[in-house]
Image (cartoon, rainbow, N blue to C red; front, side, top):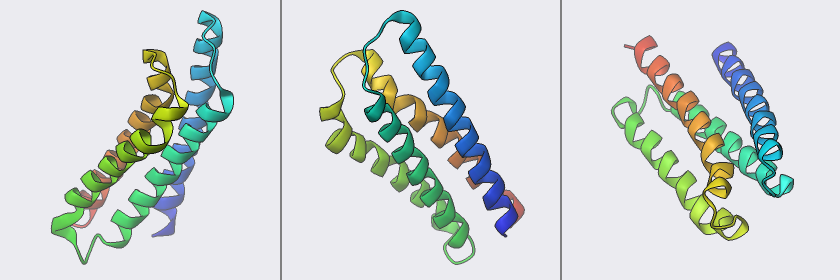
Length: 124
């Protein structure tokens, strides 16, 4: 039980670290001005919420098997709500500012989908 969750967490953290480094390199190479603190906060919040959602899915996989998809969707909607309530005011209106939230969101979402599929396949 613990081994798949640790592997998931390791892959997510490593992927987010590499993604933020690449994201910063891209912004620096095009001369885009951004707040490192806000970027770090966006990546951290997305990572923490992704871990929480996957742990919740894993813990509830037997009791609420038919509702796991709804739980996953609720988690994704909750992340967008967090963006619109907290991060939209911190980020500017530029499309590049939106990527500060969207890139880690998309990466975390991919990991959540893969873990949900793995949970559903392994317990069938």
